[in-house]
Structure formats: C-alpha cells, structure tokens
Length: 85
Image 1 (tube, rainbow, N blue to C red):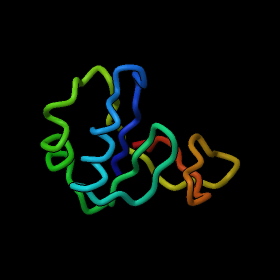
Image 2: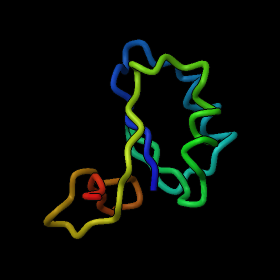
Image 3: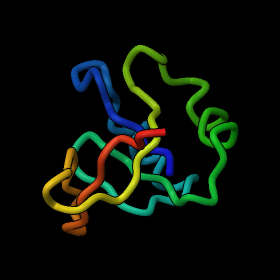
Image 4: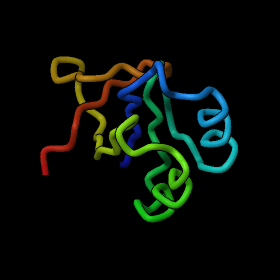
C-alpha cells in the first residue's frame, strides 16, 4: 500500500492534510504519515498531490509488519515497514 511521509513539516500546510483526508481514502495514519487504502493507485494519489511541492513529502510503499520489524507505528497500533520489493 502507498503511504505519504511528510519530509518538511515547516513548509507543510495543514490545509493539505485536510484536503488529503477529504479526497483520498486513508487506511491509517500517524503524525506526519498517511497510509492510503490499498485500492488507491499511485496515479490517483499523485493527482491529488499535484499542487504540493514534491520535495516536502515522500511517497512510498508500505506493508504491515510484525512488531520486531516495525518502522512506523500508526495511530491504530498497527506496525508498518517499507515494502521490501
């Protein structure tokens, strides 16, 4: 599944977060990280992000992970890591 990691929290606008939450299906999140519903394509996500400077975020592939391999803990308590493929 795709996830957006905010790289530059100083330049990031709260309105962008609100717009992402309103227009895209979010599966999970935590501070500075949106985990998108797996049915969303990269093109759908990028279309939504077109007005946001690309250097302020990273779009990456995540997968659920056991606690011992956890890279990100979402608000739901689930662990995720960057996909290995």
